[in-house]
Image (tube, one colour):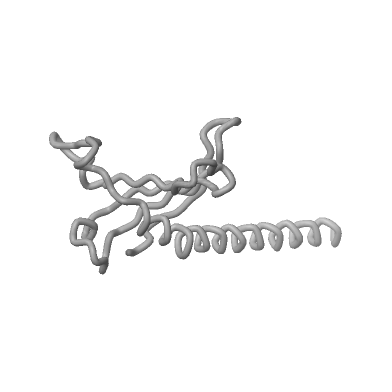
Length: 119
């Protein structure tokens, strides 16, 4: 699998935060997954009181054109592989990028503060 995009969202002020990624299916044991793009959401484990995975998966390729479908059994995907990819690859990559952006912001802010104090 290949990570194309990852971000963190929340639906409204009261919504639960979740990670969302676009993943390209590549080099998996499941031929149905290979060469397709998927939208995957992963909710935090602390929200889980069911014992199941809080991972949802939809194939973006099956949302195109006149034949677009969200029908169960057609655009339905087992979450296990995607869940592991989100936890092992996508979420750590998001957190790493977020940390880099925060560090750049802090450095920029410190430089601006230093310039202002030098004046």
